Length: 429
Image (cartoon, rainbow, N blue to C red; front, side, top):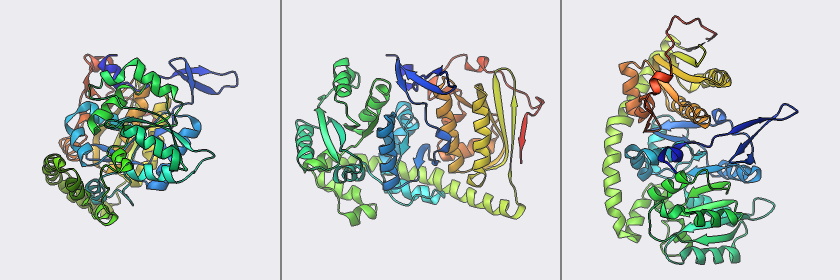
């Protein structure tokens, strides 16, 4: 499979039914229509999509996906995820295509709150696994397949789950050993996982390898919910002890992890230095600039103005004013209309005076919707101030002429620009 195939979201073939409804098929297998990403309450924080929801809503989202047999990729960003996403395009793409990104790392939660994101609680992969394991929340235990883990750890944990867990039943385990992502993606391995009939695929590889593996096999896996649960397998097996709750709440779990696994200090040291640099060059300037802009806009009563323009191939959505959470419903309505026209979409950001994390989150969801149909979001005519805002927020890649970090030669020639003189089709104040 080519690299571009790894980054392509599933192509949906639309089939019109006799009653006028729509179904979709993937590789010849009927599937439900894609979920409406624009309704997702997601925020953009330092280049990451973040869902500001707690444990209970996260569990309900997983249950809904299992009930509907929908593909549902869960990611749990922490500091290491943040740093890796800044330097590795494919790792970043695995987060951007995720259907839920809940905050695992306390520093990410602190930065998000500094930027105005309403995160109420941190939810780790281990928290989710514990909740699923201890509570039979459905009419039957969820079936889980354990992939990864050293030696026979997964098999041991699977037996324990089947003997003690009310909420999870292990239907298979597989340790792929030490190898490349390609070696772990053989037909034999994928077929064994799919044949298990599991509801949840729990991956226990290193973060980078797990996210890369999940991205590479996104279209081949048939298990609805899939996620990288990291060190959870070692907690479950009793190989290492999880930090006490007081340390986790204080954001000091990393100290405990270093005590339990001393080799981790190098990763935490490197990630800590990179995080401090991002804080000083991105999050803090952004917070100050956001506060100042909000104070000025409060005095002037500035709003947002949205116009839609189109030609035969492209719809341009032009924003002017403040692209912030207070105006998000208007922006969602405009994007829904633009997406409904089944054309390429350009977003003219030349007249935007401010973007906040909620608006960045919406842009990421529009991008995701477009990529499902083989298109991409293009942001045009950015001012120096907007370029700076995108840089501080970690979303410079949205301003590039690339698709998900992969070059697309000739793309500009395929997408004619619409000049400002094009007649306005829709206008909103």
